[in-house]
Image 1: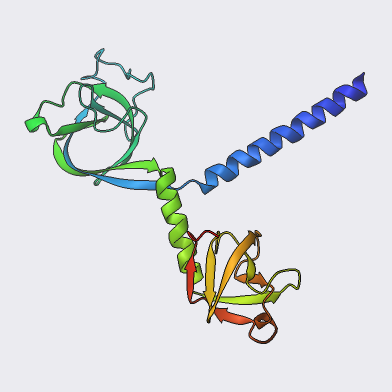
Image 2 (image 1 turned 90 degrees about the vertical axis):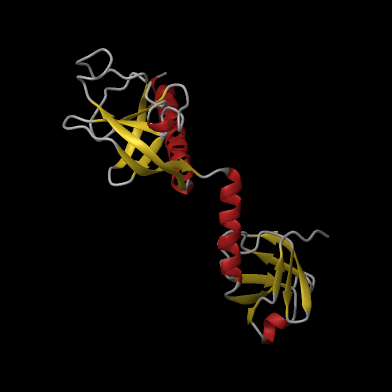
Amino acid sequence: MRKYHNIIGLLTGVIAGLLISLFMCMKADARMIKEYLGKWYVSTYSANSNTPSGTHHTASGAYATAGVTCAVDMENPLVPMGSTIEIEGLGRRKVQDVGGFGRYNGGRRAIDVFVNGSGFLRELKIWRIRPETKKEKNKRLLRERQKRQRGHFTLIYDPTLAPWQIVTDPSYIKRGTVLIGYSWMDVVGTKQGLGNRIITGSDRARYDSVVKLDDVIEEAVG
């Protein structure tokens, strides 16, 4: 019985390790966007002016900390609770609290920063730090592929492919059709790790192995 318990424990550890690795890869692939929100009035509050007075309580339950915590207006928040923002000259802050200050300064007071020392009221530039959307990611990956497509490629001959067929690295050419010289070639498959190498059934690979692509149409079908 102990033997089976050891095997189960080992398998559980392996699965947990794989899940952690997958999570780390997904996290590493994530890109953060610095989105400009404009200039807004930024004020301050401290434990003495907090509610209840003399505490570090916040609406989120976090412990209000100077250099970390900031609040948005409860009626018209500039960004959602939990957001990370960057304030001109002050660095990044985490939105962990709310307050009723949005009506001041012509409705332009948007952020209240928790401090330990002297307070201030300034009009400053504010950015939101957020993960890129799926649409933004797809556009970025397309730009990166298009940049790679302007480089040189090495053709590798494969007799199992027809002369007009090619296999490419999806991080370079994801799909569609490619113009090399006067020949249009269809992407019939992709293979990770090829880089700037293209596998083809064209005889051109035997005598002119290094080429530049004249056109790439990834949206082409058929």
